[in-house]
Every structure is written in structure tokens, then in C-alpha cells.
Image (cartoon, rainbow, N blue to C red; front, side, top):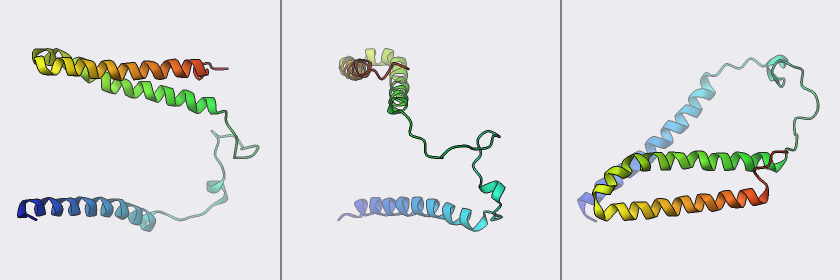
Amino acid sequence: MSPDSLQYIYILVFMIGGAGLLAGGGIVTAGLLSPRKPDPVKESTYECGQEPFGPAWVQYNVRYYLFAMVFVLFDVETVFVAPWAVSFKQLLLTAQLHSAALMEMVLFLAFLILALVYAWRKGVLEWT
């Protein structure tokens, strides 16, 4: 093992240790410093100022989750497409990269359109 590769191992160990200490330190500090004054009013369920009624465990229709997941999918898609569209003009100047970048985005959008068609056919987008 060369001395250069040993330096990277040290960096990796320090990063893992630092992340563990940061997460663990935050949890331990919050546990030690948080106030503990139990009160029945504090421990009751809060529902926008109204008294809670019925059981706390309510089974929701899976369509709500599917609709939310489709929304997140297409919301994240804009995070990838917007910067690509902004930098595409610069990619056109480099002949080697522009065709690869265009084909990658066409493939990405094709998968998204396929996912949208699939969700549409399954009725995920119908709100009843």
C-alpha cells in the first residue's frame, strides 16, 4: 500500500468518524438538555385545536400515496431537466458531448413518459 493511498484511508476514517460523532452527539445532547415536564395536556393528541375523536390509526386509501409518489417523481424530474436545458447551449458547442447529452435526456424523458402512461392507465391520476 503506497503512502498516497494511505492518506485517503485516513480521510475516509475521519469522515465516517466525524459523521458518527455529529449524529450521535446531537442525539445525546438533545437527550441530556431537553426539558422533561410530563403533563397530560402536553401528551394528548393535538388536532388543530379540536378534541380528538376516534382511533388514531386510520387506514388511508393507497391512491393518496401513489398520487404523491407520481407528484414527487415529476417534481424531481424538473430538478434534472432545468439545469440540463440551461447548459445545453454550451453543450452544443462541443460536438462530442452534445449528441450524448441529447440522447441521455431523450432516454430519461422517455422513461418518465412511460411512467406517466403507466400511472395514467392504472388510474393513479384519477381523484375520486
